[in-house]
Image 1 (tube, rainbow, N blue to C red):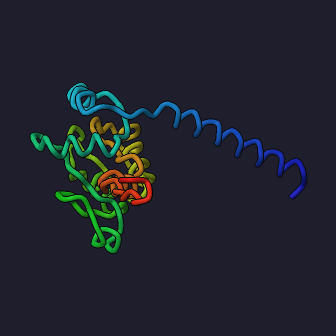
Image 2 (cartoon, rainbow, N blue to C red):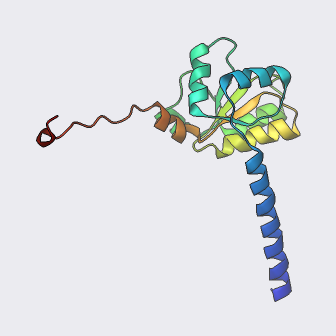
Image 3 (cartoon, rainbow, N blue to C red):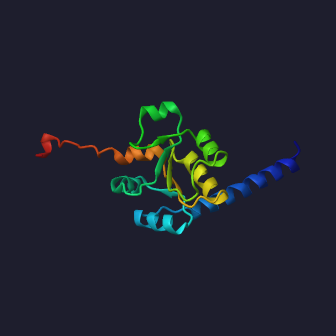
Amino acid sequence: MDIFTIGIAFALLAMAMLIARKKLREIESVSLLDFVRRMRSGAAFRDIEPSELQEIITLQNNAPLLIDLREKEPYEAGHIAGTIFLPFDDFMHEVLVKESYAKDKAMILICDHGLKSKVAADILGEDEGFSSVVSLRGGMEAWEKYSQPAPHFRCCPSFGC
């Protein structure tokens, strides 16, 4: 490869990174109330925090589908109660090819770190017209950190505790 080709490749890569960074800045997290309002209005948004998912699970009325997009082993090692196990490729096939899910059905997608679920939510929301599909920000890794109790430290007797 000559220097000109390398320069063009570098410029294209830099442009792609700028576009991706701009897209990431547009992503916002929403409260539970905002989630419900936007579900009803069909507005576009793409992710929620673990605390917001906990509120949604707690309410349990008209709860969205919780779909775990991970592979079998990680899912069996631990998952959120009430989730539907449907690996990423199978889910995308069900949605895009078989059209098994209505475009207005509320769904929360879950994966290991929030990347696959974010991609799926973006594709379905932006390209396919699904109005109420979101990703769990940070995936199961964030959920596990959120749902674990804070460590309790015992005071050292020399401090008089």
